[in-house]
Length: 120
Image 1: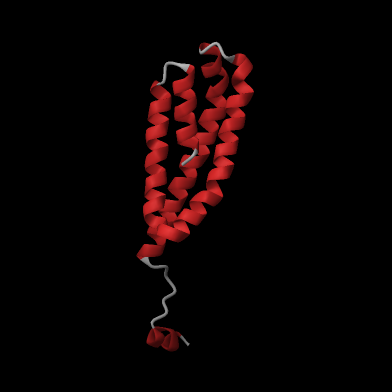
Image 2 (image 1 turned 90 degrees about the horizontal axis):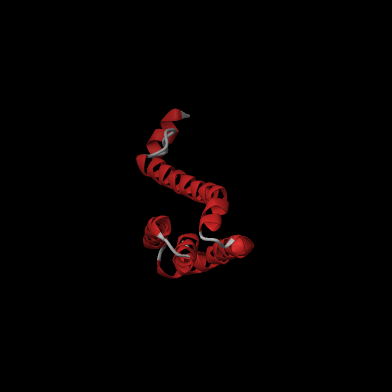
């Protein structure tokens, strides 16, 4: 039976390409999980320092809405132009939005950077 598999070219071991794709997807899932964890943990402190405790729910709602709305949009764009480039662009937007959000010193700047980061 193993002779038949080798004759057809079927291998029991996964190929290097499949492993690379899997590792890339897992790293991206890690980024998404870290984004949510850091955002929800740091939000009360950030909002308190910016003196906008009354607007905390709006920031959280905007974050969740943009994350939810972006998923089907990215799916459709990925179908139209290709998933690999879109995937890399989304990771780039996430990283840039996170960096800008980290350096924001005013409420509108922090809100815009958070939106850009979650829209990835």
